[in-house]
Image (cartoon, rainbow, N blue to C red):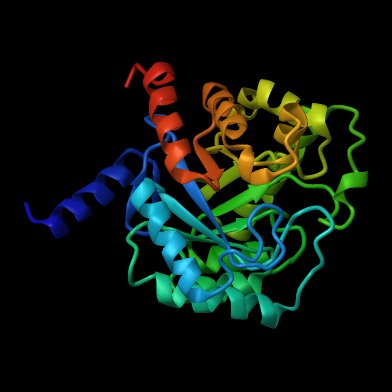
Length: 297
């Protein structure tokens, strides 16, 4: 069996197992935890803004993350940190598409576009992206879900209240986990009604998005309650402020081992994908944590 035949066999097996094909890779949920490497091509992201907003720097970082074990690279041109200002569609397209066009021929892993705009999502998929990561779960742009359906690609639906400018003031919940569950359940339904296959939907509870310190911790403790939504769970806790609060560490780049602890907790409580900056370190953390908690495989 040649390499091409083996790849086709894997994809056929993925279909038989009712798992998810992203690009030309088969993701089998439950067997191991997958790593999504963050590539912010922005000047103002909270942790790495300005570091990778040139094509050469972005390519170097993406290739390094793939070499370190990233299963997916998530490319974002619009900062979503608290207080971040919205840029124009043209500016977002300019940041994202140029990187995608250069990156697609040189890396084999699936590429994700982190956007809330259907126009950007469509252009990114046409430029070689395989997956859409929408922090608004399709609520900011009414064309997002129909566009993703027409493109026949997977989508990540994240829980949020408000937007990056307002979300820090929208943390008053009567029932945090219940509200997250209800929101994601409704967005899954809306996505399916728009024509997106249910097995192409991934959910994200939105750590740090309209949640305060204690609420972020509660999400980790009760993450497994989202499993009954029957969708793989992505957790994005990398270098976030709740870790800095615990460690009393204001520098996000020095929160690696706090992030590692959060990743362990996420895996233990049911996460399928971890969205991280520090791929090499979190890949090692994931390998050990999977060996402990996914021992039945």
